[in-house]
Length: 332
Image (cartoon, rainbow, N blue to C red; front, side):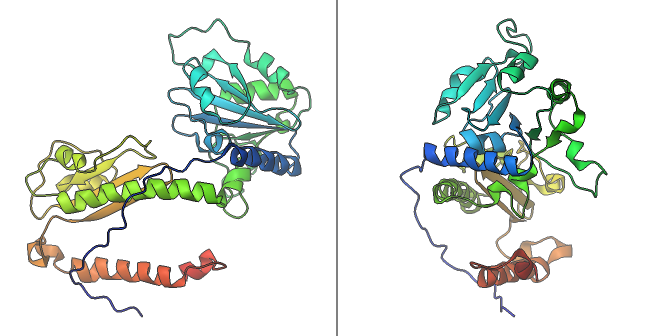
């Protein structure tokens, strides 16, 4: 068993990346091809991928496009260019897709009180994309289900009803429209469980920045600062966030997911922060103290009871992980 000793160490500084990696167009095209191949093996004629501001990872995985304020829909059919449906404000932003696609304006994806009169109907657009009677359509959102939740997991779809209703009306049989999210998200063989080297480089770039931001907080935090002032230590640079920034102290830490506030941080406070960018997230929790004597009375054993077991588990993980090692091996 790993021996753990509490001591002071100089935290290494590996520097920050100076070049931001970009994922080549060919990687996105290969992903689309793989998705179509997997969809065909599952019996689908057409693959429809839904996204909105909160749930866009599968669309971004295939196109590099993320809806900013609206919804979006990607339609993949073998032998045809991908088709991306966007709202008014997504029209220009669709140029971020690094390869040639069809872009169709579907204004009902736009925010309320915006123009609606220049779009084809959803049924007309689906018809143009080859969806009709008896077409077998796989619909990917962000979540899939299994027999532990329902007797009909394939029919449970977590995308908006108006899309599903239209698809089922056009195909003429509700069983023709099925949940296909597992093609991407299944932890055993989903497409997204393997990252290309280009994707790993992009993730590492994000990880360097999220890690440095949290490190800035750990080294710069002082009693008397407000939570808002503490966030400024992160020196955020505009990389898109993957989660809402979380930072809380004192009694607010029991909320877990709280955003920062104007609360003044005091010596002895519990403290937690989590900061995530696309492809990276760092979270740290502890107490605003210099040593164990400043810990609250009832948790002077905090290091022995929590920190040491946690560190030991992390050390065991690093000593065990490697090529060919299964998740079960790590868990054991």
